[in-house]
Length: 430
Image (tube, rainbow, N blue to C red; front, top):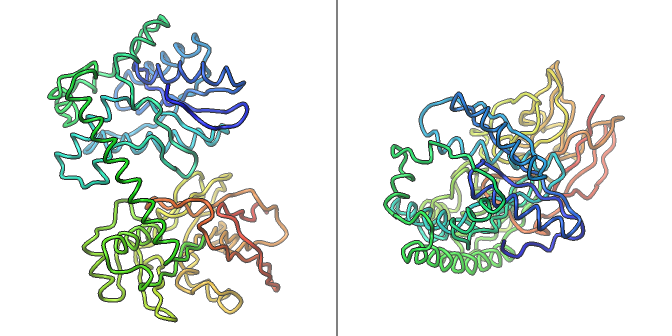
């Protein structure tokens, strides 16, 4: 396994295990790695529910893991069949895995992707016309709202991982969908014709992905430097940007596109050409964000009010409006929805722009009355910490220390400033 860490003493790692040889190898290697450090490993098995036998297969995999001394848990997803099945399954599986890892106190989730997967991903994206970011293929580290996603086996050939499982005397489970030619990825895998991942073609593609990844890392560092100079980002999900400091060059436009994606909770990268046109106009609406001229020639970025998600039952964990990650206890009859018109009650006491206030998530009780407001710490005479809400937009994340803290502690009749943390505590209960 590639070098991991530093994690500190007694690390707790979660590993996604499908039952195939590569994810089983990841679990076995992680078991040995944490055992030498006094830590623990938890295997997470996702049952998509797309085939009648999938439940029994998941239970069988848990048995294999138990025999190997690895604790495991099955995540029953119950996905409906339909179009874009593989894409939907990947998204649902990753969401369930990261949430389960966090629930069990595992800040790191390991995935068993290998050299062949990396080569396949690069080839697939190239055929779809991806740009440089897409051609960097899978990153060895990715930040998710609940944990860090690690891929420590990207440099290893699949044949080596299968040898690890064979040496342990384990017979892996083979998912028949991985050999179904109706899926584009399976056809591409067959076209590569290198099941063991040792051929020149796969090696060349994997090296190309590494080169693109290094290029992307350099550009990402430059982009973050530009944002650090030009932008102020707040955990209440709005931002200020100085267009002069941003600049109209390619890097400045890319930085603004990243900022728009964060504030709008965009599911996909924000189009560069549309961002350049918006910057030239001096404002507009794009990818779920409003960009408006503000004081001092700056640009204010807030959530587009016409695209805010509807009310959602308070049954955490969930990502609300593509921007706020909600965890905590369920509350029957309660729901999470935008603060909306109720923002006027707070406008005179705080500096947060009204448009940003209106787009903040609020928790409403069974009578439709405002109960809790996370961004402003609103809620009197109740325990603080029953729920956690974090501005963790699916449009991406930024390094720790980026957020400009401007949270407010508000109780009925009194207002005083209080520093907020990125993971905002919400008054709960009662």
